Image 1 (cartoon, rainbow, N blue to C red):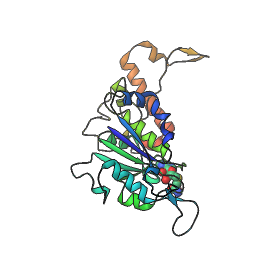
Image 2 (cartoon, helix red, strand yellow):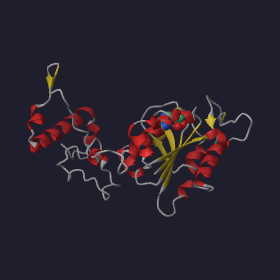
Image 3 (cartoon, rainbow, N blue to C red):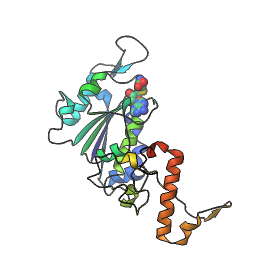
Image 4 (cartoon, rainbow, N blue to C red):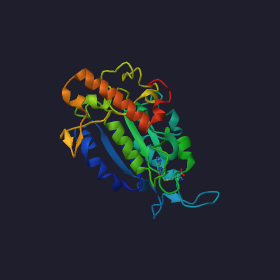
Length: 264
Ligand code: SAH
């Protein structure tokens, strides 16, 4: 899988790409990450990427020309209208990072993990000329209901979330099938949240629980002891406890995930 990150701060990604699972996935060739300096696609002496907003108001807006040309150069083809890009099935996404986009979640990550390539457009300043959302990007995505100063962190979060879902990225494949938002908070409970290709496009997330609590040694730390059942070695009891604990935690921290009533 290939990721391209179009940014005015190419150095930004040096740290995040060099650690943990993303680093290993790059080293083993599971993913290829290219960082593209937007200013390469400017034509003036000052390498201008932004301009004042039509209609007045604060701040600056990223101009459309360098962004269109950067994406076209990466695709080696002109993009008259990117939403039409994938005639033979969606293999490439052009994702505009935007606080005003659709919310990213684990279901989006699973969908993206099926693609061959994702090109991220990282906004800055007041944002990006709207024609990029309308005619260049295939998706306009927000990572949460808050405003950041740039699209680099959001894009990196998506690279991370998608990479760890690729077969072979995690040491233990069960890890990505048995975690928050993926449904099988209880590994015994496959029927509740089947994680397979058929359920892939459906809204699994709305029924998924948060992960169950994890504990490791020491069994007693400052008088706080690990739940007895986890030490006992009875797998059925452990599975039961984990499911109940995941439900309790979901109720406490994310009641919205249970609002369908299916888990209650
Ligand atoms: N004026 C915009 C915010 C611009 S912030 C608004 O009110 O919606 C500058 C850039 O940061 C955006 O273009 C976008 O690329 C990125 N950004 C900020 N918050 C984000 C979020 N929650 N999700 C994804 N990208 C975000």
